[in-house]
Image (cartoon, rainbow, N blue to C red; front, side, top):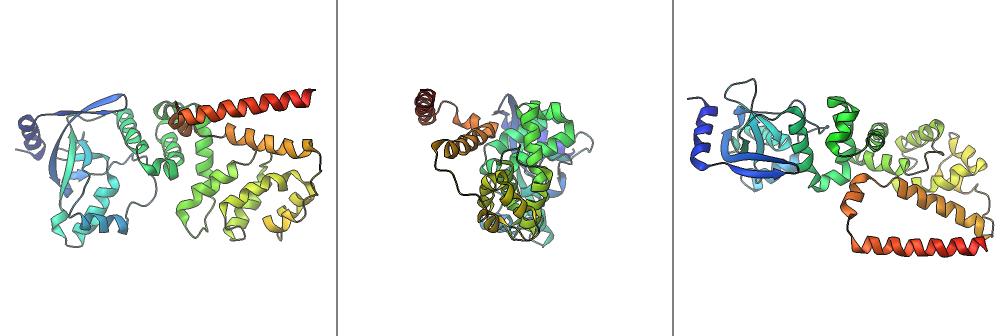
Length: 316
């Protein structure tokens, strides 16, 4: 009897459980498999290195995996199972086994009772990862880029539950992040890209983007939040010209800003521009999380009342 048949017989004894993952309901059962009978997913949405010494230490501290892998019967290789979610856990368990630590060879798994379609597999993976902290900190742009590679823009947007223009923004942030190549912590490249894309798109000419990337990679700009000061610098012709020069940086360019006019109008317009810019670039995932928030809705009402009073004042 093959291992697939043996596991299938075990499933009949144990019974299947239903697991709801967004719109999908999977029928699964739990068991253990030999690490060599598990095959990673070649169409994994997550990019980047999977070996992680910290995760290996966690596995050893827990005396095995705390969270089972989610797997499916492999459609082409008899007796094997393909990972739906858990490539990193499998990879780092394999590292330990290859070090001679055979106690980590038996892997806890949750097995789907059938092989999923490509779209189902992607939907399940994305649903699982949206529940995790990593999704907001670094993953959504990476996954958007990878999905476009795998299934194209229209299907990627459908799977993510967003519009094609919003998907394009996520992909643009990822592609920009790939240009930041000399950071002390490479994992924060997405943060740098998000901050830069937070500047008004009208102001972000290719020459400005090139200058920022160059100065960041030269470590002449070391705090991503300093990029917010570009809004004022780029609007000022003298400060902008200095920043674009090889010797220019944010600090020296800021010294060349023209003195602000004292009128309320000149101070108000940039603030309104910045607020409009920030709201228009708010990610769709953030909006989803804020739905129904009484505190947020209250603040919106307060802002609306303030703007109406401001309009009356300026119109009179």
